[in-house]
Image (tube, rainbow, N blue to C red; front, side):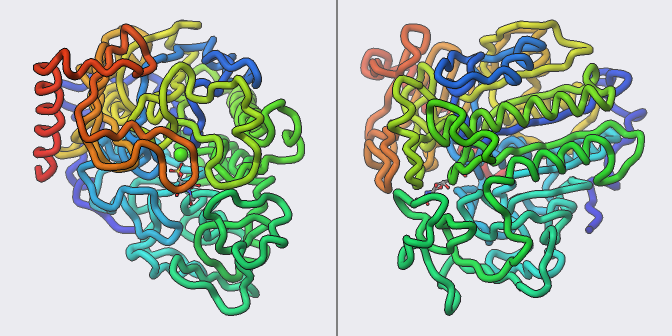
Length: 515
Ligand code: NG6
Ligand code: CA
């Protein structure tokens, strides 16, 4: 692991400047629990009725449930980039949905939220889905050794991660930069260009898809009876089984919480815990399969809820329940058919995964980025609150830095705002605006009252399989969110000066890119 300059420049807590608030004592443990593709309407505390999520609901009752928090993008890689760096992903090329052999998208020279926690004296861990690249060069990773760049280089003391998504190779966990459970008899090779001789593909051998068939794409490597994106060879006993993904993620998260993984010392911890649920391919453990009326997607929601309950139990058992601050949210909005024939669309029936909002994952419409968001910190936050404050996952970085009394280095978290009073349920004040990025990398703006979608290229429906409205139009669109949250009535023509004003904010923010 390399040393970076800002560590030398980092101020010890005692020397923190006047702007920072006094750090709470004792410092709380912090868990950011990030679900994948979990929609605003997928939890019973957000109105779901066909699936019930008692553990998440209990967490919401113990703290604050937010109704207007946004991921900064409607897909995973850019959304996570924003959360971890506090920088809007539209400023950075290479933040689109990443392949499993992408090089590290966050550079070791960047100051991350994990660096910030470290600076505050925390031990830091990342467990679960990563999806922000690994190694210094795309496609050049040696999956059979220690990766030359990994999460230790961007602030994490401990990591146990999936390189990308469950539907992308390599289908192995990587622990501290090395394939976990490595099988020397089955060296791993990965390519996103060509297959390896002798390896069957899902396209040519659909009969080998014993666990799930593809509905679109996902027709390259076959691992565990499921077609994937990308080609892979080897892996042997290191290959994951999809039905065990949630258990593996949970057990490593708990080991980290208990101090059995990473540095076991008296420090408080920061855990970035990313579930695979409810991303495709959805193949939960048999304890959950068939347990919801909504098929595998509903079962994956139950598995997610169970994970939350297990984390809470582990905290209770470790005596950490009171002074652990938990943020539960999702990286982007929901999708039903995202490329596997799991019948999610048909079985959803009346369930509205996007809640009251239009669109879905990938879209410019609200359901792309409006995410469930719950904060619980039993020692400090009142119970059972609901907050309509508007802010984005980007804002966690600076808000936490304020909570911990850390003065950020210059240029760190450039687009993250201090929303701590709202985050702790002490104020309902919204951020002046939130910028979000749909799949075509245009930029949308929300204020508490308005939603502005800038003109952009692209078809009105997603073109490659999912039946999703994109919200892309060649003309500006404006919606009054207080009148109707569904973005049905475009009032851009009635409010030309608002349109100009909002487009100018977006343009000015884009111009700041080169700072
Ligand atoms: C798409 C995949 C989809 C999902 C998504 C990323 C196909 C046909 N579809 O390209 O299944 O993996 O990328 O999802 O390949 S995300 O939540 O990680 O952003
Ligand atoms: Ca996602």
